[in-house]
Length: 99
Length: 491
Image (cartoon, rainbow over all chains, first blue to last red):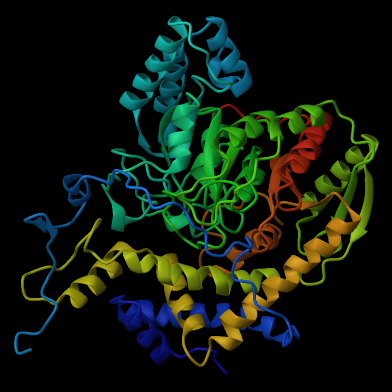
């Protein structure tokens, strides 16, 4: 049985904001199935009582003094934007017209 | 003056310090070499001729004023394109960042400048550092100087190839699952992944934040150690940077170069010393182990039973983190925007932009990571992978109670021909079989050339405990003193 279906891949692509093509869906579904079948064997490791590791550096809550530092210039930051206006990032509409 | 492009960083720095060559002459020689060969190698995505000559002139001016020069002053360096360089194009080899010029420098770049090194430009890589061959670069692959029909490794294939092609004596890479070490192995160069947290991630375009580690690439172990020392150390701008002094890796490399490993205990990783590797790789590795024994090292076999689960754990953890990190490419603040016709919504434009801007491997990993993090699958995949990470760390900790370092081949196979592993992504992932455990543990590891298999380079990997980076340099330098360095055919 396949570990992942074409429909699931389509759903995940939507969640990931990727407007994938039908041809990509066909290809990715097959490839992701092979990958998932290959990695699924980590389920074989008995690890119920093992704590998870998210990070190799055992640091928590790194604090520093709150000192005012120079920040980037607004014009330098906006220079790399696809679209900017009035000192802001300009974006396509976020809400539908009727909202 | 003989050809400076064939010299080590140590030799170049010596020439500049003594006044036998100017930094501008050295930079020009390397820029000319790039102009002559890079059409065939394609190690660089962007050559910063103007910036390099200006930085070199600054070193020469400093010297003429009698100011003290650091040990790498005037030495050219190539920088992987995943590292932010102010005003210089930085794309991570992705179309989604084509033409982007960062408004700030990575900490590593600041430190390179402070050390007086001369940045030649940005090197090619797999898109967002995802791959083992540079075939996933959106700008075309880099060709291995040993055989232009073969891959230079990845993701940092451009950095490694620039060294093997004598376009640069030093390069910076980043290692998330082997992206410094595997390219080093297949190009006959040295590549070191420092302890995670030992080098700053500030200004790295993030792939997998709990694993990404920038580090040095060079043609000799001593050069790599000097570059390591120049970039490493605590950075308050990286919250996972370790606030401890960096071990003296340069002294360790020099000590190793004397060829004496008396009293050093090496652990041969049982799970990585037999099956799975090409016969030529295994043969070169075994000969190197004998060479290390002749230098006085004691070798014992060590079992690390969970290492076989490192690859599956990595291919759940890294894509999961990537799916989150790459959400920042949303067509709003930088990079590409596609389909903004005045009618489409932000969400539609975002989806069209990401579809057009990301290549196939990046999309596969974003989808895979989104899957592994989704409810219903989280415990079985991401959660289990994190537990396996604990078990792998315990394998390392236990091993280092018995030995000083662990050794293995760096990668199971030599440079493979283009196209031979792209149709089945998992076949590509196997290139990192031996390098990944270290990333999950967080310790340092280095790949050093150890021999040839049918005319192609083989690398040996030395893995050390966290914050004991000096140990791996000592062993690597000792091996180098025994087997020598390897020179590719003339391009």
